[in-house]
Every structure is written in C-alpha cells, then in structure tokens.
Amino acid sequence: MNQPSRAEKFVLPDGVRKLTFTRDTKVANAGTYVVQKEDHTLGNIVRMQLHRDPNVVFAGYQVPHPSDNRIVIKVRRPDTERD
Image 1 (cartoon, rainbow, N blue to C red):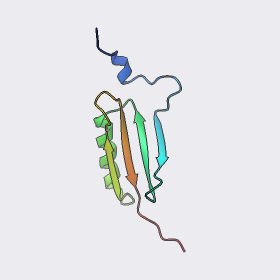
Image 2: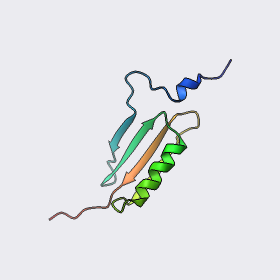
Image 3: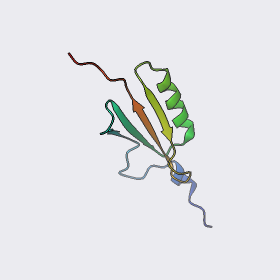
Image 4: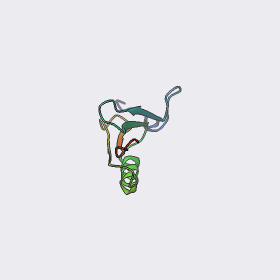
C-alpha cells in the first residue's frame, strides 16, 4: 500500500520536542510556537483563547501543508514602555 502509517500522525519520534518557541527577530514582543503532531483542532482552540487575552495583540496559526502534521502559532504582545 502507498499510504503512510496512521501512527505517523500522532506518535512523536524519539528526540523530537512536542513544542518549540522561537523569538521573532524583526518584530518586538513576538514569537512563533511550533507544535508537532497536531492539526487545525488544537490550532483554532489556542488561537481563540489567545484572542480573549487582553495582553495579546495578534494570534494566528497555520498548518504548513496537509500532510505535515504540525501547526505554527504566531503570537504578538503589545509593546511595553520602559522608564
């Protein structure tokens, strides 16, 4: 059969982290979370909860490709004034 195993959609390989965070180098107070082995279900829930938070300016997610079992969540907080 030319179909990938169903376990590849939810079983995390050894040495792979479920969640990673990378700070955005171009936008202040922003970053990107990558969640492995998840899909639109979790992405939309996280996005909606972040929209409810008054300390979040932007929250969005994407699934890079339908066969790529990961979501990319981008979050930005408001700029803070320094004394």
